[in-house]
Image (cartoon, rainbow, N blue to C red; front, side):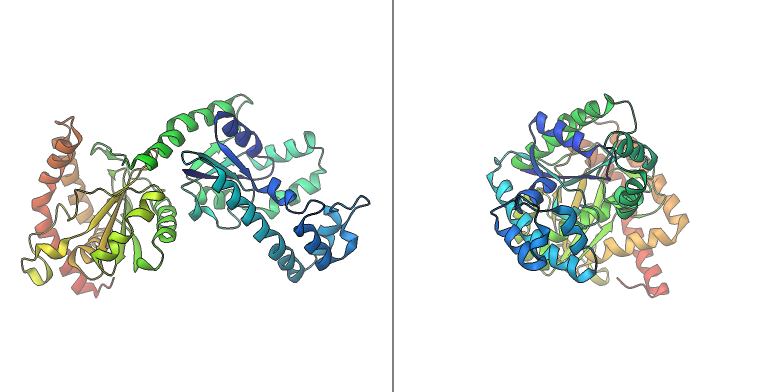
Length: 405
């Protein structure tokens, strides 16, 4: 099962996207619809609202007068909190029931207007944000929904900013074009990313990319933080810490477009307990890789100790975002080196330039092979000898700067 969180500002076109995804086969779970259902006449939810706010929140037919409730509930923080304490658990319970009823191979589309405001992104494999310029949204609200302009602008101002939504978005759906463009974009998203992503999760398939360098992307750190948030939910207390490591964590460094995340755990046994939770959210384990490669030829203090370079590694099932998750033991040399290497490169432009030249030579070597495994082997073979010296240099820098993980 794949869970997609869908959101967007009022008037952006989120409802059109949700309808299109539903028509393509998505299982739609609409938070607004559920929030209305749980307070319909005869429900426990409506009874609780009447008990909390009085009978004047009912209309003449015994249904909920939403404007009257708003006047009562949004006057102060205490009343708003009381409303949320009644409605949110009911919405959450009904949402869970609907997801439980979905087929095991479903793509569940959860339409949540306040997903960004509620910081819910970590609970989905992907978050899609529907975007339209604020002035375009005002025009739609005024001319299509007949909303007073002052109300439209107030509603937009009360919601998350475009910057906040962009930071939360794995998928940015621009609805600024012609009316027919949106359906085409959403259909491509469904077939090219959502369907294969869901299938890969079920089959435990990791998306692999040929070792080709991409220009440094300033959004890599934000992408990593979204991944880290999801991984943290799956790992719970088993994770001592979770870090963005590797070349994509170094500003301005061209790299393979693969995000590297390090999960630090107390033991390899603890790492093994995370195999299923990570697989379930789209990060299957790569069974045949259990140690770092390339790595320096020695362990702590320069002594040969290959065992303590052990790790577990997971890949990503999302065809739109390749990822490696390295699970390493706290304090072991591999775990420490991943952190110090990242920070050493970040502090030394000369080292970055040197490392980039090495990566470019490795890319050239890999390009001679069409097979993925052969290409990666060639890529790593070029890089491996350099790491012995880099290990010493990074730790020399750490000692001089009193670096701490």
